[in-house]
Image 1 (cartoon, rainbow, N blue to C red):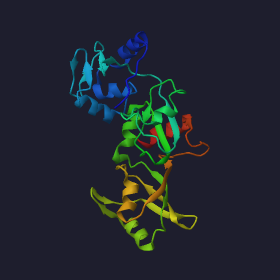
Image 2: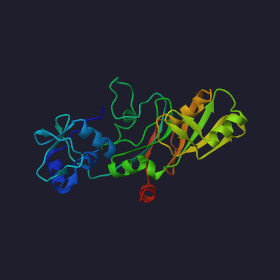
Image 3: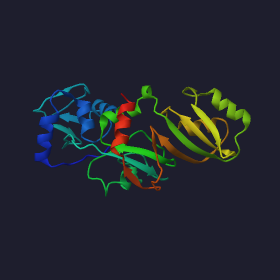
Image 4: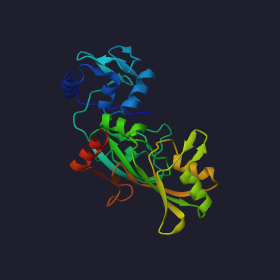
Amino acid sequence: MMKTYRGNKERGERRETASSEKMRLNKFVAHCGICSRRQAAELVKDGKIKVNDRIELNPSYEVQDKDKIYYNNERIFPQTKKVYILLNKPKNYITTVKDEKTRNTVIDLVKDHIEERIYPVGRLDRNTTGVLLMTNDGELAQKLSHPSFKVKKIYHVALNKPLSKKDFETILSGLNLEDGKMEVDGMDYVENKKDELGVEIHSGKNRIIRRIFEHLGYEIKRLDRVYYAGLTKKSVARGKFRHLTTQEVITLKHFIK
């Protein structure tokens, strides 16, 4: 479930007039800071978005300047200020805007400090820590999440036992998992510790790092993402965040052109 955000009605109406004409509905919803464009398309298909007084199921519907758009029966407005946050995610936080089981979410770590409505790009599971990008830039989030851009990610993996040479070579050669063959882009031991590895990968498949090692009989004790699309968690304490620099935002956008 994604959070509904309220805004100043008068300010929102001005934004809508300026931003909504001939914009596709899924893009409009993403620009409201609710979710990425891909997630917005699913919201539309699931009947969660109303245009004026009717449910609109076509994500490609072109929003007109006279249209009023609603999510969860509350009117939504595009945001004009783009925000880019790098969070060093701690354990026991869900990578979502809102959790139906009322568990802690990554939004809880930033909501008292960020006025704008932001959401996480991609996903880290509850027990995975490290670099997490959060933004209200729907276009950037959409592209970074798309497999065609092959966004580079590096993880520090700590296992319950040393990784054998045979299994090391097997992983580098590629594994056949239930959803197809999976290859890493690179892997090496960390400081000659046989039970700790650095793994480079671009796949965004769910729990892919954990599934690779579990397939070979290993248990992951710690999983920390140390690099994502050129961003690292250097100088950002666990559970803390910082705003991206102007140059970092430019670099990200250049990367996905």
